[in-house]
Length: 341
Image 1: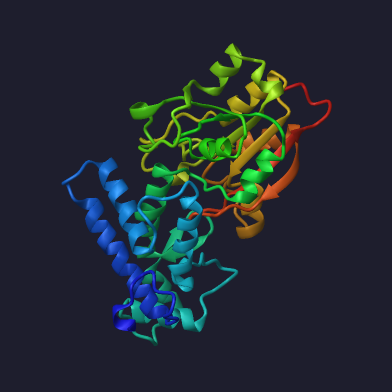
Image 2 (image 1 turned 90 degrees about the vertical axis):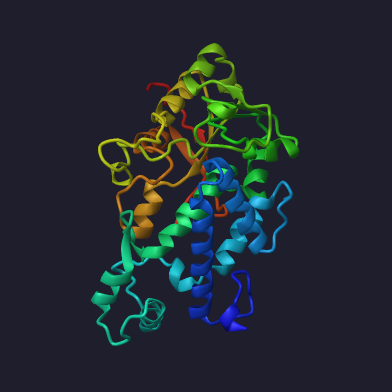
């Protein structure tokens, strides 16, 4: 059974065979994604559908399929390959042996040589197994671009509904969060700077109610939205050359949009906004967890500092995290006497 172990098998507890099954899956997805038979959007969708099929999920999913998909992915990635290795948490002898056997290395090879042979740096946190970078490219990214950059669960959606406020979502993307909230009876007004085929990030949409407009334009035209709506921002910025230069190749990030999260928050505050729901990675969390000063993948440090200065953190909600992401959902309320910007 172990020699033909499928990736979705939950019975095999031999980490080495499970790791080989995962590597085989990544190689097959890579071949599918590399073909020139289809355009990149079609290939991305086919990769996602194939992944869901291999994990035993229907390719005609329910409206909460994303949470289940993330759970199934985490369940089958071998634990020792999913770890972020840091100087504080060195590889165990068992992990070292597994890595050597998986890569055909001498089991007596010194630990520093094993790391040099199989590990690569990941962000400012530690190291990952080199070929596990494909997990991000072939699995995480298609989910982000076909669903959302962050995945909601019932607790997150319920927390938003319990605010008893209409929601203003900016940078709504595919509309996955908006659609889920609306299905629960939450009133949502959703905008994105680009819609449909003009949106460089998303190729699937879950609602046709997303309107076009950036945050500053919308609040300038409709300032009454700020004091009456909670502002929902989900991963408002992709890596950019200003706040995230370590994620860029060369001097610019060719696929990045201009940063806008801080300007959006300033416009919301200027017009009397009181409640912010932020979904993304936070610099303070990353610093506590990894000892790094990076601001995270999803929002600029300027935005995060502005949020902390003028708002009080009311609640933190854990959400299903895509592999190698450390995001959560936080709810913030405006501090008294902080009208000046």
